[in-house]
Length: 298
Image 1 (cartoon, one colour):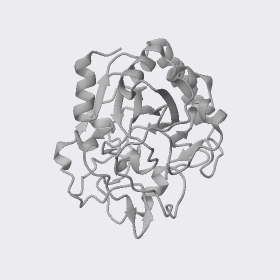
Image 2 (cartoon, one colour):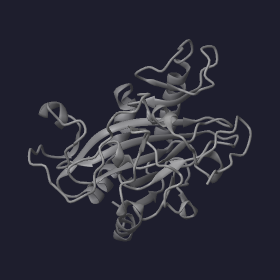
Image 3 (cartoon, one colour):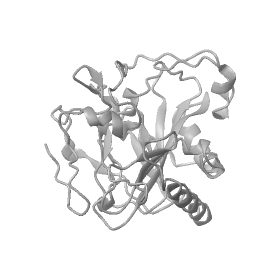
């Protein structure tokens, strides 16, 4: 468990970073599995159910920016999400009803070209009956300011749900001309094995990796057991409950007075957030090539 002061910090600012939750043996095993999975993209020519590819990917030179739902593809990722210390922290932050896995992904920012992710709120993608949801970022490499760490706007989880639409379609990103004070952004940095926790409504994004160091971030999305999805309602209780990490099955959603925008109509280019965000008119995080410092367009 984490100290009450850390819980209070999370409630106030919408995030907290906890060091050394994953040991060296598990880190090494995860990195090895990731290397094998990325190598498996050799010969792949387009996005698949597992691979989201960098724009510069070539079948003979694989470049993967995301592994989709990694917990469905290898046991190591199911073991990590059930790490006892992690589960105890999730119970502290999400409340007494229990904890349910909503999804997982593994974002890979290779040196000098790892793709950025524009400012957004996870809540825009999957609103629920209450907002006791968060994402855990498992730092599989050291995360530093120069290798594209997750960046957050402290306290923004208490504010509005921003419009994530462009030209009438959901694009999964916030117009950089909105009233967000980007100067307040905080990078979530730490040594490998640390984990970040950020609220589902917290505004966040990440820049291109311009360093010579990799940045692999394993992300899990967790919900309180009594938070039920609105955009894609659960219709199979047994399948829904198969994702319980802690707590018991419930059929009485907890309703909270939280702002909601539905991710409809869907993005013209469906896939991961990277594909959704291609329909944006303006970007905050510039994509500047493979060895240049990205400029931030305000």
